[in-house]
Image 1 (cartoon, rainbow, N blue to C red):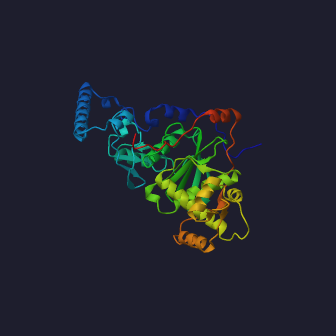
Image 2: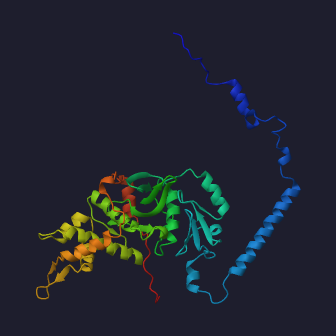
Image 3: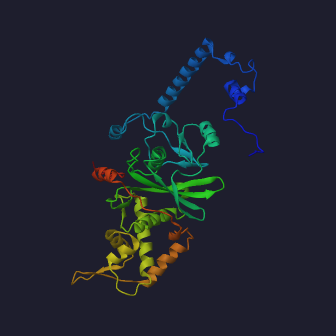
Amino acid sequence: PSYTTPFYSFHDREVDELKSKPYGGILSEADADTSRTLPTQADREKFEAARRSAEEDWQRKVMESEPVGEVNHRASQKVSGPPSKIKWINFGGYEIETWYAAPYPEEYSRNKVLYICEFCLKYMNSDFVAWRHKLKCPAKHPPGDEIYREGSVSIYEVDGRKNPVYCQNLCLLAKLFLGSKTLYYDVEPFLFYVMTEYDDLGCHFVGYFSKEKRPSSSNNVSCILTLPIHQRKGYGNLLIDFSYLLTRVEKKTGSPEKPLSDMGLVSYRNYWRLVLSYQLRDQKSPVSIAELSDRTGMTADDIVSGLEGLRALVRDPVTKTYALRLNYSYFEEYIKSWEIKGYVKLNPDALVWTPYVMGRSNQSHYDRAQLHTVAPREDPND
């Protein structure tokens, strides 16, 4: 048979020879000579002098910024090394004031502004490095699987074992806004669900929540955060609703890890009341707490808390038994006050997800482990 196209060997000698030459043979040997660009001894001495001068200048600034006066001995016992000076983070074009200190490496905690890439969450200590990183960063969305998309909102499932660096950076970012968070680097036993807003530039980070992989855990959320620049938009409620959607798909009931932060407690109480208002506004037949738990994925304790907030749980002083008092007009008013805000709602049909299945060896390891991501509240009297 005859072929119209010529036959090419696997190895082209001419191409191989060009590849072996400096700069692919584009420059002549004289132009490709770099011997004149090697640093001389004088250049090295100038560099060392500049480095020493910069270090001395930095030490002077550090000494000047040290507070003069009484030292908090209790705080000094808990913090190793100099305290963090980070006051703001530059994130996605916003300069956000931080609420708490996070254990970033010392060389990144010296400045008042920390630069964080909104796509890969890499942290940097100068605007020039951040600008250079932005030009080269290949990430346009969180690593992992996109399991939910509705409109401009996407949610990704990120495995802490497969993407440890991203998840560690995420935990450090969360610590800047969550005072009770204690887990930063041991991310392997957790799954992270990252919410983003999508546009032509990529998927912009909004917030996240994490949960344990082990099926024996009764917590459907270990840590939850919405960035301050995206608060008051209903995203916190959407994250909570999404966590309960996953719980219902797993055919379980769940509750967030305690203790909750002040803002987290307010958000969860509002969510519990809202969900129960939707469940009870058309309820005409008797219903039990167990049935409400099966419908919503909420635990009995959380349902009782929500019913008390709706003033729907009453106790007979004689028989000392409890009953539900359904005030339909109050339920409608509560729902209307929420819907009038126009917040984005969860669409369960947009979820494409299969529950995480843990192998026997990993499951036995995690079941024996004590995993705490939230620190107990400190007693100010201690």
